[in-house]
Image (tube, rainbow, N blue to C red; front, side, top):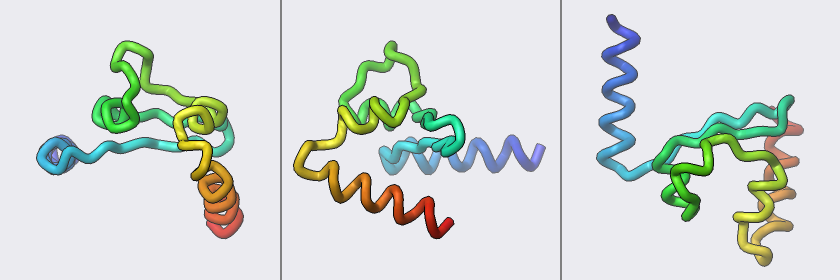
Length: 79
């Protein structure tokens, strides 16, 4: 019951803030996005919620890609 309550509160906070969530599986090289994350990235909801590293690279602006990739590598190296 407590887990369900916490999940409900998280969902309400996410919906109220218009925030997207994702879970990045570093070993699989995939991220599972919430529907709100799909909207934020301008992706159709019917495309599925799993993105590969190649998918991420396609949606990041080309000017930002070097910094995003460098920060991704830095964050996973120090995690």
